[in-house]
Length: 238
Ligand code: PXP
Image (tube, rainbow, N blue to C red; front, side, top):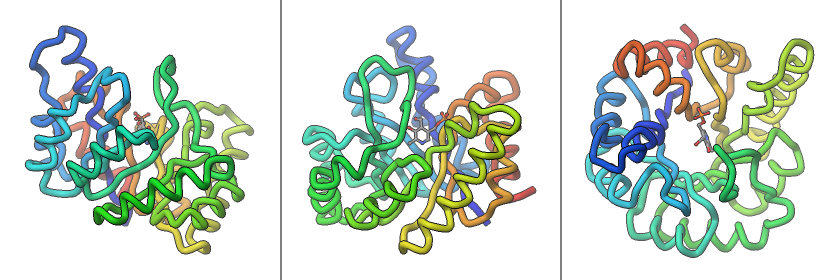
């Protein structure tokens, strides 16, 4: 059965809108865990637009499941990760102006740089995942770079409509099979919601889904406990 990692970045987005202390993503993480989340994910961005260093430090001490830190493959972020030692680091590309992570990492192009960052993170005992598009060459390069996991970018599938969506789903299916064949653990995420997650879950083979925006958006209307429980049921194939 697949697991659910709840991304609490957007709880911090609301807090940062007023620059105050509420709502606290640390409290949200605890509620998500009580509702059945298998892991907590946060993206510490270079510009600190939502999650702050303080959040990651507190989450390291309070998360009872596992903590997945999404971050850019920069020297600054690797130093943060080596200090905090999350259970997982997911390396993502980061552009300053983007609203959210726009595409997968180009592991083929940056393999050397990524390999050295992965090596440092491994030395600190951190399991490393690379956020990649469902593309065979990127998966092969991820295995060669000694990543433990890939997280397949589901955003294009989520944005697609009709026949195009069927094509994108098939790419994800192929990527899941290829990743496993290469000996990689396979996670997935980005853009998944209460309407489009079931089809990906039906493909089977994804270990953990990282889902944020749709859960926090629903939580605003129905409460976080209910929003997480409903997504847990979906990813477990209910
Ligand atoms: N996975 C990765 C690597 C991401 O960067 C994000 C967004 O922070 C997510 C999953 C969650 O995406 P969403 O908020 O669209 O569910």
